[in-house]
Image 1 (cartoon, rainbow, N blue to C red):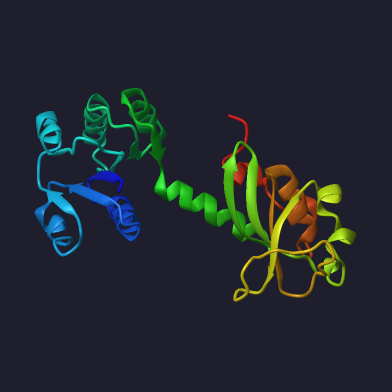
Image 2 (cartoon, rainbow, N blue to C red):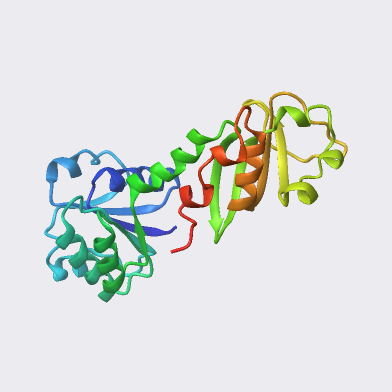
Length: 238
């Protein structure tokens, strides 16, 4: 069983804790607020109320082997920086820290954070593309510019088979699976499958190709009416 430590039970930290408990991971939580810790006294967690600005305290309570630590100190920027540095000295392999600003994130990276999270910003990036497209239902940035997305099949494809539509040749997209409506699950399909109303396609491709497909698939919207999905996904040039 994997072991994790969560330092600081802010909104982000509490949500990570709930998810880890669902996965049956072994979790140790640390916070200075006893009232917050007491909320988890009936859960399967080891909890400590300590001052995290004391490196010796952390060294004393950390298990011999820890797979990762999640740090959420709210708006206490200096505390999160020092705590991150202490965890690096303890040799924690994964140090995931919630950042408040870009400058904060740069310092966290310098002192040892292996992954920096902007929860509010990342939530916005996930919602905004769905607002600007009538066919994009869900998406997941994978690596570089590669994206996996759920897309409502455009009406013009109804009655056509996968072979006739030929997403790979016409749009440069790969069809992973297809389902109809919210109840049906994704499964295996044949090249002879015929698209019908309510179909949802699970596809993969670059942000630029997906942008083109979503634009041409949106009723009453031209190619120029959609902002760059690459920028919305945070995949644009830096």
